Amino acid sequence: MLKKRKDLAKVKIKKQDDLLTSYENAVSWFETNKKLLTNVGIALVVIIAAGWFYLNNQHQNNDKAALEFAKVFSYYDNGQYQLAMNGIPERNVRGLQAIVNDYGSTTYGNLAKFYLANCFFNSGEYDKALEAYKDASVSSPLLEASRLAGVAACYEAKGNFDDAAKNFEKAGKYSANDPNAPDNLANAARNYAKAGNKDQAIELYKLIKKEHGSSAAAREAERYLGELLG
Image (cartoon, rainbow, N blue to C red):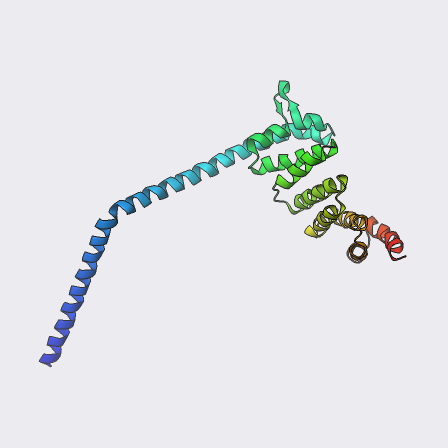
């Protein structure tokens, strides 16, 4: 029994020695790397502060963009595209281009970019419209489908029927709730036919009849299928 107690005492002493050694190693490591840890801590504080400042600044800029967008939108809605693009400085109405320039990375800045692209397209400036459509980032599925259709329309206007067809098809399949989906698919089929891809055009016309049977595009699809199938 005495022997067992001595063995237990030795084990206890060994554990204490190991604990002391681990503590000393930890203290030694900390002293060696104290400067590094301090610098890392400072860096983390700077990163966190910079992130907070960026997000706060983005929020404020988005509010400003929303206010400016609301002022100019009525001109776009009335088809006054030049006024919508350039604004009316003497009335303190900034144009979509100015909103994009100043707040283009915000949510409303991107929305302004999308409507600016529409203005360019309706003014016949297809290269500028295409660039703006591609650069715009919109969160709504319906707006994204419309953005893709805008890209497609620019390609069609420029005579690039293959890219027009591909983007119209993406737009038509992007959102199940998009009321413009059958029209976008019909536009895709038309452009595939123009690009010489007859099989893909037929496939899309059949898809319109199957999934959008009650739409006007489905009635047109029947006629175009008759022409393509001979």
